Image (cartoon, rainbow, N blue to C red; front, side, top):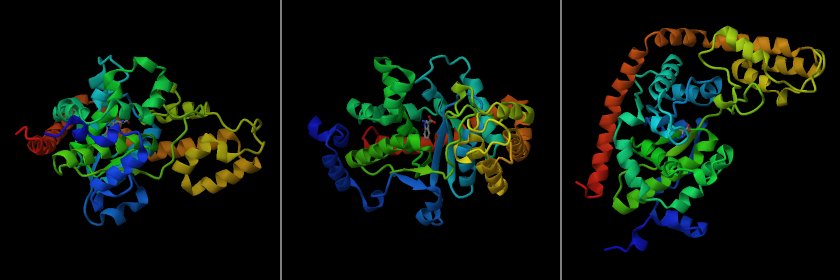
Length: 374
Ligand code: TRP
């Protein structure tokens, strides 16, 4: 019998990166010696005509904002035709920072409503809740034995959260294990790609380690997935900080054109542009970032107008608001329709759960058999 020292998942225990790397190289197949990240433009050259499997997920924390659209939803929709997509509602993950689950179903339905209205086709791409596909918890339990506490504590995303939320010693076992559950989410569907923001790349790296370590110890079950980064830079919230629901600086996908304008009006702009005709610095202005995204054809003109002082902030904001409202009009209409019948959205999710369960069970059969659990 192998000793625990030999058997345990080496790389997670090793502080010395050079040893870790050589360990990894030894156990990686040619195909696995890829970088952890793939960018939007590289997709075709990497996969050719083969459709990659994609697992994307979000925690259901409420209605989505335009930053979610630009950074996640829009890239997912683009992938829909060239990939096989699975869309996870990560409801168990919500528990890592919020124990009150009284509105969890409503939040999940709200999020799925945004997804569908803004372009996810649930016929093509199943939408499902983590809590309804029990194999997530099964694989999570197995994976939790394959990683050390030290490895989890080294995860920069955890360090950031400890700092941002001020939790320190108060972090729960489950919260520390956030990336373990996320790895289970991804590998359960044998995903090739995981569309994420830059901040989530460390989680995908841990997922890759799980895939390799599991394969090494029990036989080849999992592909080693990669993070997929879209080309859209992060949008700034209307107060100049990172766009986030908790900061109250968002424009929601479900906002009316009027709400959109009300929020845009309050957006901070270049503090040096005090009067209408003062020259501004578009590069530092968040509203200019919105123009780059929603008004690409006029972006040069906006840039010049702002810099010379010919364009005032109110006009500038009005113009981008119109563009946003115009571009979202059909989706918002669809959203209003769907929201009238939340049960129909729940039915769509339940259909997705049947498909997700099938896939998840296939993988778990492989896992159990590789591990001799039969
Ligand atoms: N961690 C992701 C977030 O905070 C949500 C998530 C959970 C996820 N499981 C996932 C993302 C699997 C991609 C793949 O947004």
